[in-house]
Image 1: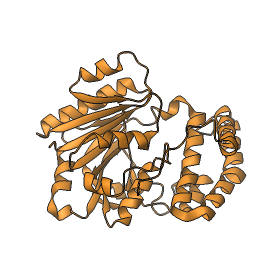
Image 2: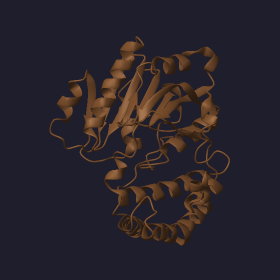
Image 3: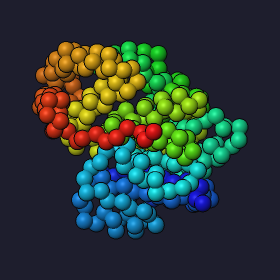
Length: 318
């Protein structure tokens, strides 16, 4: 049995995926680990993708005919392995060569049997630490994020803990899904990612359900990955925004019921939409005017016709 299964979901990120796989193998050799790597190709049409990845090392590649979503692809990759630890990595994440073995060792330590998930420190391409973990969101947190309050720094650890709180290893509500290691036994007990979250909030949902079983999520300060971020999602900001809003509302429904869903959806339409429009017109929005208009048009079509956005998958098997 291998020490760790590494699952990387590729979506139009071929060059980054190759770098990610290379870094995993380098870290495995450095840490004297037996790692098996699974790359789930979620729609990259690069004709040399497979050969480029395989040139780095022995990799199990699964190519989907279409983009099945991040959580569904992660579940598919995890199902192919049997290691006691599963490490989910974004393709634009590069593992420091000394940072893989300590995470596996931490989970294997009997003293940490109450920990289900671990996440490393995240650094940007310049080596600066960026926020990567938070407490689990309440419905109020989601409401405040929807109206843009998170841009002022958030409230009490959401959407991210402060950089000062990232200065030491600690128990947290959730770690970023860009680099998330979980015990296979725990992952299987909660039946993996909820595929109704096609993209975004799947890490928060996973952490929430793991917490519900009595396990901690743990942030490890002394290990790290470099993460570029938004490599795949930035390729179509209108669709990305629409998926982010839909997943936010879906998360509210899953964890706070139908009333939470309806309330949050109302705030998205009545407040978030005009605020984003105003920001875009003033040139201060993350998403431009065209992207905002397209996102809400896609959401409307998806609501009334069930089309325009990728169809979400199933919930966890019971």
